Image (tube, rainbow, N blue to C red; front, side, top):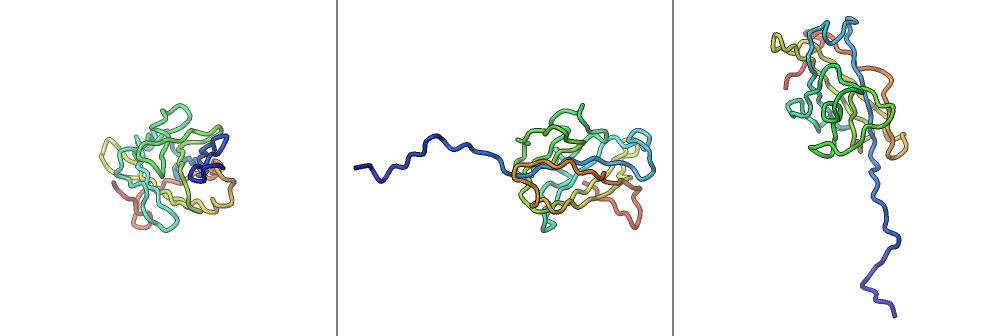
Length: 161
C-alpha cells in the first residue's frame, strides 16, 4: 500500500507571479521638458485601493530621474509594491516608470517634481489607475494617459518627502 503521509506531485508546479504591473509617464502642464522646468527628479508615492501608502516618497528607491525611460537603469525605472528591492521585469512596451507587484483593483500615484537648484518641490500631480482586476493575471498595462505635473499652488498642493 502507498504511504499516505507522502504527497508527490509530478512534475513540479511552476511558481508564477500573477500580479499586475503598470507603466506610466508624466508631462508638464506648461508643455515644457524636465530640463526646461529645472526638474532633476521626481519623488513617487504609491497608494493601494484603500488609500494606504505602500511606497512612501521618502523611500530612497522612490526618487526617480525626471526623464525616466527606456534608457534608464532598472533601479531608476522600477518600483515593486511587494519587495523593497524590485524583483520584477520590465515588460516589452513599458513606458516611463514601471510599478509591479500590484494585487489591488486600483492604485494611486502621486508625483512631486524637485528643482535641485532651489531645493524645492515645485511641480506635482497624481493619477488613480482603476479597474486593474479586469486585466488578465500576470499582465502589464502601459497607461495611455500621462500624469500631469502642474506648478504647486493652494489648489495643486504638492507633497514633500
